[in-house]
Image (cartoon, rainbow, N blue to C red; front, top):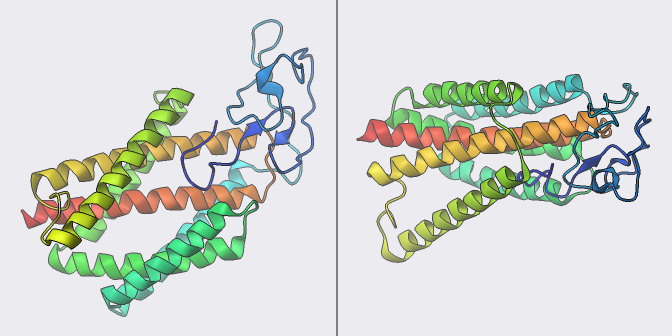
Length: 285
């Protein structure tokens, strides 16, 4: 399954070829006459929508035995903890030192550049990902401190809201209440594109006409727009969980755990910022 997260957009997994595009070794198959069959579209290398194979008796073929050097849930959790920990540590420094928002915005631009650089690289770069986490954390700390001064408690409420969304989506994904399908992915991608384009139009209108542009950043319309942003972030999380699940199932290289951590961090930052803005609007009213 291909994710709409920019980190994962060029990556897919297949049981036949392992991790598409990275020459992962083939996974051993037992009793599956369909593995590698020319007519089976899910057994082709580079398949972006790889799904577990179905055996001759209608049952799913069990995952291949664990191999050294492949992505595991432990490797994803440890890399994600390290990346998010770096973000939190940098944000704490910016908060404690009362970093100016202008400097924080400059760091945000640096983080954006590093994030785009990693997104277009064919391989994960831990140094690049952690550098992104540092600059992103500095930005989050400065903007959170400024908003928290105007709306006391907003930062902590945004953190709690982000954690609640993460836990809720993870629970619903594990229980298969949320099912990530190709149609779901296409819907999320289209909705996210519309959301981003509308945000850019709002900024342009605000720059040309002054004020708040289309009114997407305050008032009732701002609240609705913020809720949509949080919901989109939750959908991104589901897509990221699917990508991690497929990576583990189809034997992605262990280094790709860094990309999983990077993608999850991007999504959590999105959700946090939307919560922060939403809470600031509600308290401002």
